[in-house]
Image (cartoon, rainbow, N blue to C red; front, side, top):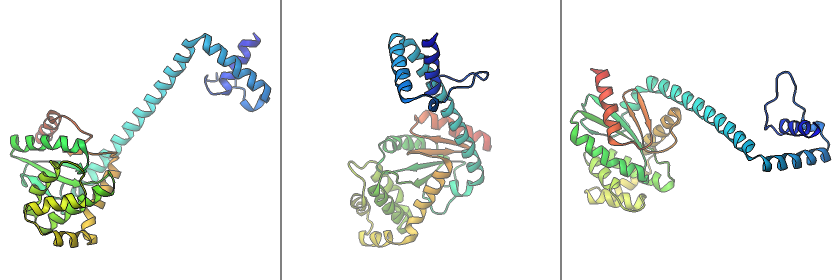
Length: 261
């Protein structure tokens, strides 16, 4: 009986056993140092002899973690819906963002991306497929450089290209998304030069505070939407965080098209 009482008290004291409502848990502060050492030894010995108890405890902890994660995910999804409803102009029709595909398309897909994101580069082939198959798709690209200073440099060059000559942006974007190696200021400027843009003019524009505005706006929106990495998409009323197969995007686009018709 003494063993059982001390073991149960030990579990209660160290938070490994829920306290019954009708029997208040003993506080760990009620035990002396020697008593706590004895309890710990008893607990260790018991758990080593009864590994099923450990598995049960960890199972309960996993269930609790899963419930917390599900609750947090639900909360993030609800918050994102509110943002999508209240920030439609900033998300879909900002003057700061380049548009590719059909500028007058009946469905808009928004992509948050980073030129150093491997998944974004994988997703680029999806974009090409969608543009080829769907002539009514409008695509908004949001520069969201989350992978360090070099990504910021590359995005600043991209914004400068868009400001300097919007007609050259798509060629620049293709060059960056198929670029091998690190994307940074130098490699981005080389891509821009290959399509006929002036390096000096772009570098001057990169230093203009206005060039940073699209990136700042993307950061603000991503924060409100609860995004944690690139790529991320918005299609219609749906937020799609992370890389997904092209078939998933096609389905979301079709759903958005039906809702808008």
